[in-house]
Image (tube, rainbow, N blue to C red):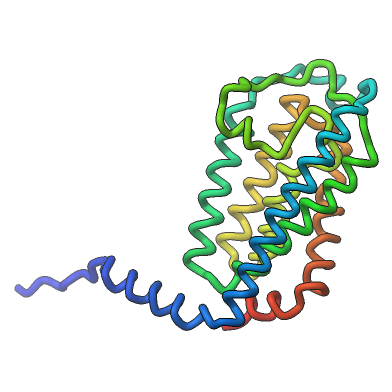
Length: 227
């Protein structure tokens, strides 16, 4: 009795499809749009660095918080640090798989960081007294966007939520990014790394950033939604 042949995964076929996908999308116009996104993204990191330094120099006293004042601090540094690394790696893989979204993702993240830098330059609350501390020898902590004074609003909460909005039409990715957002939001509260207002405000501000990105980077948004 003949057995039915099961369809086996074909890595060579997948690689050919991936290469063909990139060949189709990487026009001269797309290339320069990606370059603009990369430049804008790294410019936003520079802005963030100086904004965080400014906020750290002028940091004030901490304030009470209805959530943090009623829960003890938990050691969640491994979630915050390694979770962020996993999120970065996963997002890079998603962009490689679907390259047409690269310009919009880069420019939206850059806009997010610049707007957040503006906010942390305006508000200089001190960290909550029981905030957990990180090992300064860890590479990711050295490269992290965060200092003890750049609290408002939470980047760990906002960035995965922004990615969820960008990939809202992809159900699996939407829920992965939303789940990551919730895990980070809970973790920064449990670690007393952010005030509750930093976390809850992040959702509203991030949605506004997404709406602004759709307007400013209209062509990149249209490309990211094309079939």
